[in-house]
Amino acid sequence: MDWVLVAFVLFKGLVFATGMYFAIKWHYDQEKTKADGQALLRVGTKIGAIFLLVLLVLLTLTFGLARMLGMDLRLP
Image (cartoon, rainbow, N blue to C red; front, side, top):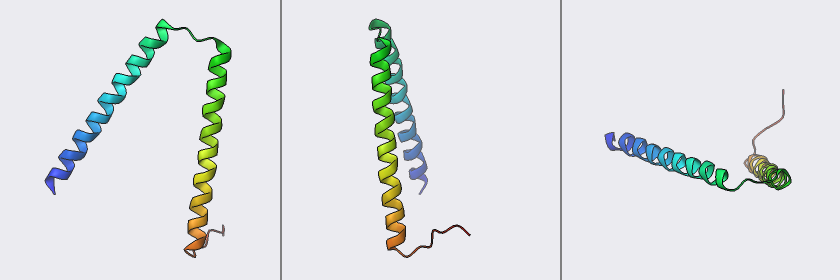
């Protein structure tokens, strides 16, 4: 069981290192190409809409599964 902790810590370190690399690369690339305000707003709106849609689908699936399993989700 001791190797599980080591594996998880190594995996977490790998994920953080990869994320830091891509974050630094993205910021460096943004310096090269200056995006105009309208394109940035369009991309932000699309990402926000996709996030809300995924959240709505996830909530629907969660409550549907809970109702199918017979859980009572009413507030007291």
